[in-house]
Length: 484
Image 1 (tube, helix red, strand yellow):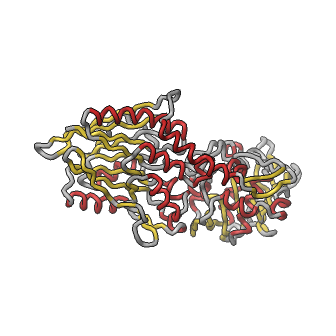
Image 2 (cartoon, rainbow, N blue to C red):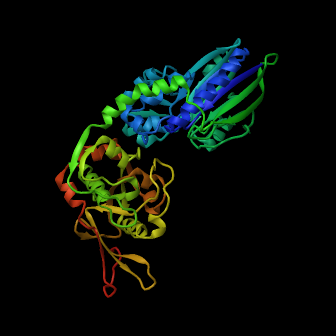
Image 3 (cartoon, rainbow, N blue to C red):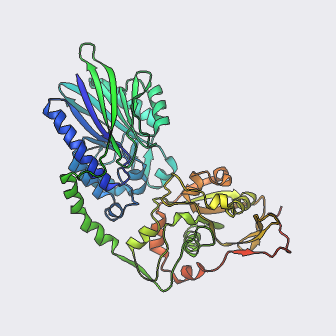
């Protein structure tokens, strides 16, 4: 007997691709079911991404509506659903999607999220197919959002045990963990027949095997979907073979009619929300990536005011556009700060702070492409600071080096510990070694652009955005490292 799994992962609000994929998937599914073949359709997380205005304006409801229109049988939350949509909205997302939403290793306020399930038994062609879904355990950011995320391996072991106790003939894991973690899951959890993966954006043209468990994954951005076939031997009660193929999305093909109607039904809500006014600007607020950036300065000022700290640091690449004079709406703020990341507070020494600021002056750092960890721009950009001032100089060979650095009007002390607030990307990405070596890390709940919405209208913030924090020393002046 053949069991067909049609699976999509990491769409990241590529809405047009998603609707075209849906048209292709629906045709295939209809053909299979017309031939009497059992089929299950799954989304394996990160279907939404708040980089997209329609997703931002509806808090993901447009994406859930597309899943409902496509008729998926199950959905597991990825980190973009879990970490960027407020937990009180999750039950509404689940209801809008009209599907089984898995949160096998997620708990909210000590209990299962309303509308979520740990596992589900699907009956197809006389078989009991057990399914569960796990997501990455980003413990620190989830904690500040009031979510408990447990070890996915332990949660999977418990789910498999329960499903086998329920008499399931085979077990499917929906995993938003990434390929490396899926290999570990397969190695440590007995009884999983296939892991349908996500998160790492791998286009797996064939199953990867770990013991008797097959791992499949279908890329990203709705560029393809997976068609995985399980060959089940009813005589011995086991999966004998797993085959998979990637079906490319026809990027010039038609939209799925039902998904398009669902999308159009959400546009008005998104437009109304994004049209809300935030402030009026009387001068441009530019972002620059290779020089001091007033917009990044403003964001650093906001972080320093909202969170108790010694210094705030912001990479200008956290901002994706300048703001022009006039009426500024939520749409403008979203377009200028599309990252779905939030602030972190951490502690580093004066020596580490000096090293970070000095490295940020080098073109190899500020021209570096930003990748992953919620980065949504092009390059990392220069570093903006608040409650700090620096002097820089050029060496005879043309290098830019840090000559002095003060925090709160006092020279940085090498061994003193400083409380720093910064976008989480700087801690997660490992671009600056000092951030990875920092300790006492605490996540804050608001997204960076939510802080802009709340505080950018402050006249003092806008005034100080244009105060220079970096001064160029003349060649005759000498520099001094962080004091001992």
